[in-house]
Length: 364
Image (cartoon, rainbow, N blue to C red; front, side, top):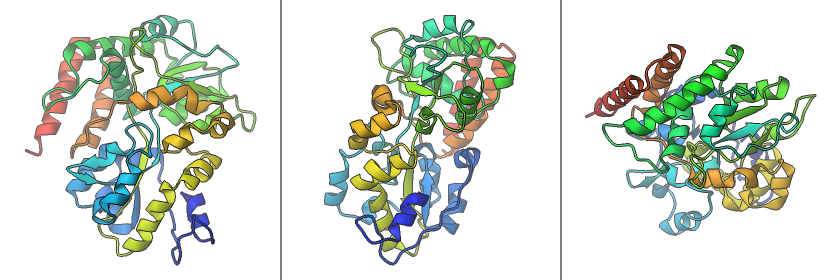
């Protein structure tokens, strides 16, 4: 975003006449939990992820894109993005943000320590005691890892008002998650995906079966080891990879008084030139399908895009109701405690679904 803001001040196809954007950063934890409603009062442009869309819409924090551009222009965008990147920001009949980048959970491995993994989840559970491996266990990623495993065990599973995941699928996922947790070194507990990738690039961990990919780790830098990525595991062979959709979107605040300029910046980030050139050049993961299929972009970043595209296209989308973000964090803390205590799978999944049910019905 900083690179695009800089280009926006210059003449050329990505310039935004008479507009200057100052971006403030927030860390990954704040990104998952900071109040979008509060930020919308202070900023014209907001970077959010799709699970926070429900609470943002309920608070009136975002300006629907379809109120600012024609149906014809929106129609030209419908096939531009990879997988469900654009659809994940469509809620209650309105298009909210436009995708800046596309991401989902994939596998990460050290090519100097192991061959590219092509393992099913049951095989990974068996191998976890022989390969130094780890998974993200910092909230909200315990829950997201659990859901990624569930999405492999039951591809395309649907949550309803009473169950986040079925008992059978949930218990299967929790048993496997427990096996991975038991085999993981204690010093690697309580890490988010970036923390895991840092540990892999600086230490001797060889494999993470499921975490959000960050393409910039596929280039060695400053003495760090290279970390490469591959499709998320399947269960059993022949089914689709199990993964939970990530990525971010750029939205206009519902309070913005600079709508034309803000809209120009949305068009800027959505342009093919920005997605094919600027975003990959600064280590971002583009959101358009053409960029993911571009061989030059792929080769430059260790074949990240061709190695994970199947997973990106199949990724499971999280619920987006008002209250999900809070549940996501609280349920992750609960699951982590259940792993530490070696809790029973049936009781754990029942309690998880009870908390989910209360979260969904709290606003009724």
